[in-house]
Image (cartoon, rainbow over all chains, first blue to last red):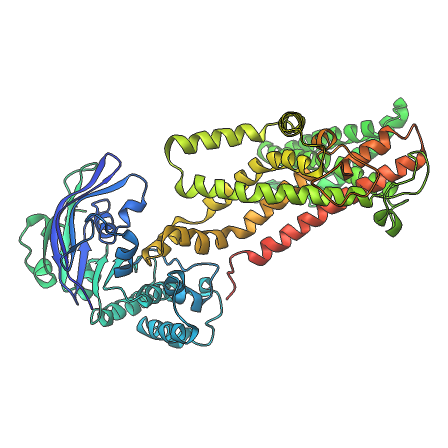
Length: 258
Length: 354
């Protein structure tokens, strides 16, 4: 079910501006990989190249290879729409569809893909909401608008929406940065459960969070403003936070810069 | 003038002298009294002159008194406030008086008979007759124009916001801007020369609809474009990231989110073209008889009816009454459309309730 991601020599541009350069890494299935690094170093850009969302930005283009279990996402004839069904995404700010109820939000991915009977939808919505630890809070008001939930609930709703389409990989772009500590804890617990089923990649500015939730951590940095971001190192989270092999990583983690 | 209450200035740096709350009202009332006195004394006939004198006096006296009591900054604040009020009144008074005059003169002959009968067999100078033929013509012409302009306008806006990049999009935007400025008579002449003179089609409601749709299209494009731009990009990305194709994202996420605003824009565009007279005069020609078929032969139309009742009346009071009643019907029609638009906008607005 979960799939491995192999990135090699990936460079991404916004128009003529090179945002990230020559990134290669492997993301193991059924694990959590955290991306850390200073703002503007290209973590989010890199994350978005993993499900071809980067090219949605005007001027965005990508060179290099991203293999999802041996299949190149940027190969000729690959449909970005089917890539995004395999690789789901949760965004920084909760963004439930404002015109839809809680139920419709979770069912959106399935319905908008034009399938499924009512009974089947009911099952999947319940399973997804339970998977996102939201079911008990919303089961009595599935027909109320999703935008009426609190920020933390909305974010879990977005996670439920993302896992409802059964992706193989789940990308999370700073999913907790707009949330309070209690909601953050709920999402972190959830990430721990979800990694049994999915490959999870999470961008975070919170180093403790990276240490808490991830199995492996990648550190990104850029040499100067305007220069492309690069992958400095990727290793087991424990090693990155105790004994990183690059001095810059240690400086960043210990708060000496960035 | 009134004597403003002066509070103790030495109470501390945060306390300053303040004019009492009733001061603006008192200033206006005082200015009105003085203006009436000036008007009567100088023998000014026009009430408009009295009003203008009162407005100027109110603004000046507010400033002078506030500057003396409260200080210059507060006085400037008050002068800005009073100028805004004066502008508001200058804008509202003509509108209110227009509606008042139309209602007062329009209700004389406006009844069920007037709405359900045509002018067939009624001379322009005689009393009687009605606007049924004109109302029907206006509804059909505006309906057809809407059917033509809305799909083209909305699709153009979707292209511009969701797909348009580079030269073609810039060119389309430019021509939409140019179209916004086309005078209605020019749109009418264009359709006249193309549809009636070159293609040899006769006068008909549909010819009028063509010209009206030309006038309507840029308004629909502009308003829809603005509404689509208001849809947060995050929603599009959320949908795309679920593996939903772009066209379905637009259809199921972007359009439902903005449908309230789009409908409002369309209704305003309809309101704008409903009162157009020139293209109708050129293309629909007008008739006193009921013609239910907009594709053949001249039809009536409300704005045209108003114009003809006025122009052909040779001073007959009956024709004037009919013209006012038709004007009232036209205003009521546009107002109802606006209310419907607001209702739809509120009904379709993204829900935030808990």
